[in-house]
Image (cartoon, rainbow, N blue to C red; front, side, top):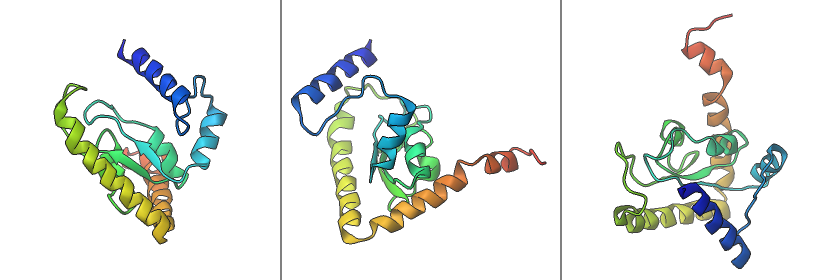
Length: 154
């Protein structure tokens, strides 16, 4: 099982690296605190592999912009440089997870976007991007919008 193997690798990374922490039993309250304590959220599934993704949504509604791959619902709401940062291609087909096509090109673009986020953070533009994330995500992922767009009126 791929997921179990990845969990083992993350646990090993946490044991050997100071800047990695593995949460084996992440509960809702701990997740909430992590989001509130974050400045930038990394949302990096391979394009085409994530159905929607919700962690970037939770971050965004709390005013935490994401550096995100173009996958799932990310492309509907994140506007590059405005309320987060996007990298990679929006693929319409699945690529094998070990594809060299993904590795170099997308990694280099990912690094550039992380640098843009850091420049915004240290250059004073971060709060504008964070506020834009807060405002746009709360509007886009609201029950009010859902009812309005799907024709439910009270």
